[in-house]
Length: 384
Image (cartoon, rainbow, N blue to C red; front, side, top):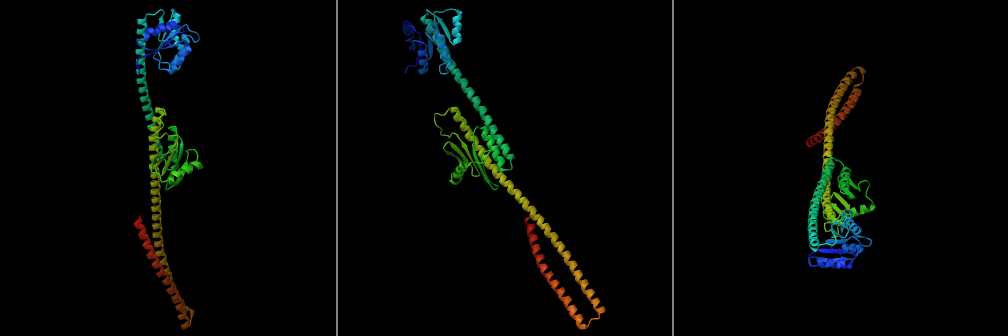
C-alpha cells in the first residue's frame, strides 16, 4: 500500500485539474473533485492529507467549501491551499477567515507549489504528533485527578462508616459513596443485630429482594459476580448489587476512557463493600461487648443484693431468737400468778415449747437456704 501523501485537487475547470494532476502525481497520490460538494464527499470518505482549492467555483465556492471542511471535526485538520487568480488583500483575508493555510496566486510555479505542499504536510504531521502528546498528557492528568478524587470518596466512606454505630449508618455512607461514583444499586447487611435491605433512600423492592435472596441462597463464592448487566459484591454479611457496571471482559466497542472509569469504579466499590463488611463485624463485636458489660453489671448487682439479703436474714434470725427467749421467760413468770393447776401449766408449756420447736425447725430450713445462698454468691463472685 502506498505511503505517499494524498492530495485532493478541487477545481471546476477540467484543464486546471489535469495540469495540477500532472504536476503533483509524481510525488503524491492525487484525487480530483469538480466542485465543493464533491470535495466534501471525498474528504469524508477517504483519507486526505491536503486540499488544493480553487476559489471561483459554483456554490459552494472555495471559501465556503473550506469553511465546511473546518467545521467538521473529521476533516478540520486537513490543510487547505487556495489557488486563485484573485490577488487582493481582501481575498487573502477571506481565505484566512475561511480557515485556509496558504494562498497561491495563479499562475503558479510548480516547484513553489510542491514546496509549499511539502511544508504544510510536515507542519500538519508535527501538529498531529504534538496533539497526540498533549492528549496523552491531558488523559494522564485527568486520570490522576479522577484517581485522587475516587480515593477521596473511599476515604470519606471509611471515615463515615467508622463513626456509624448502626447498620443503617453504614448503608447510608455506602450509598453516598456509590452516588459519587455515579452508580446505583441495592444493598443487604446482615449481622447479630438483624438484617436491613435498602436502595439508599427506600427499602428494596420485591424484585430486588428476590435477586438478593437468590445470591444469598445460591451458595455463590464470596467476591464479585456478574448477573446480566449487574455486578454483585458479596462479602457474606454484605451484599451489594450495582447496576450497569461493566465487567472486566467488556465489549470491544466500549469507549476506552469509559471502560477505564468502570474498571476503577469496580475496584473502589469492592473496597467499599469489603470495608462495610468489616464495619458490620465491628458493630456486632461492640454490641456483644456492651451486652457483656451489662450482664456483668447485672451479676454484680445481684451478688450485692444477695449479700445484703443474707446479712438482713442473720439479723432477723437473731431478733426472733431474742423474742422467743423473752416469750419463755414471760410465760414462766405468768404461770406463778395465774394459779393454774399443774396439769394446766404442763399443757401450756408443752404448747409453747412445741411452737418454739417448730420455729427452730423453720430456722433449720433457713440454714439450708442460707447455705444455698452462699453457694450462689460464691459463683457470682467467680464471674466478676
